[in-house]
Amino acid sequence: MNLRKEIDRTIREANEDGVNAALAVCVLLESTLGLSVEGWFANDPVMQEALKTMDAPEPIKAAS
Image (tube, rainbow, N blue to C red; front, side, top):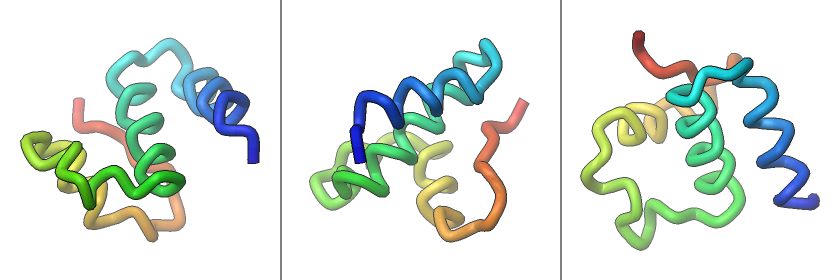
């Protein structure tokens, strides 16, 4: 996997929605690097919720 290309694809798929792009990149980084183990998302309630549903079959979207 090429992480830079995956981040680029993830951002493009967000269709200019910065909130969803940021969340999608965080989810990608979590699934690739396991950042939550070090507490990177400890103070982020949106990401905490995403972590609970990371095995969901559909892309995770931030609440509007």
